[in-house]
Length: 88
Image (cartoon, rainbow, N blue to C red; front, side, top):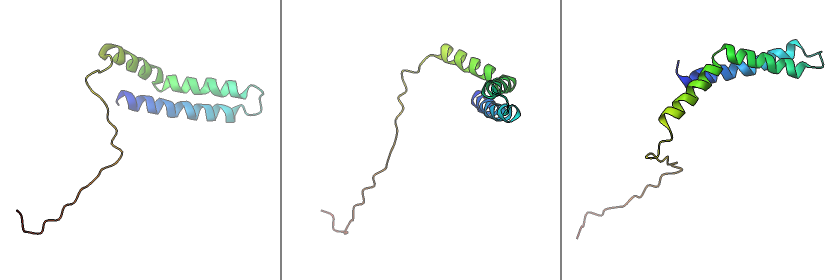
């Protein structure tokens, strides 16, 4: 898998881990802490830390790309002209 896919999968594991941890310890007063720890454990287990480190390393090695500018296209405009056949 690519770095972004690994990170997305790990983030999904983090969310699932937090939910599972909270459901498992919902009667305890420290349920949010246990849930967060469970989510972090699942995030690391599914490669989230490695994906973050890989992304940071790639960013540092490549640096910001100054030549490329991103442009957002918000709409297109179409101009229609009618020709009558008599050009001149």
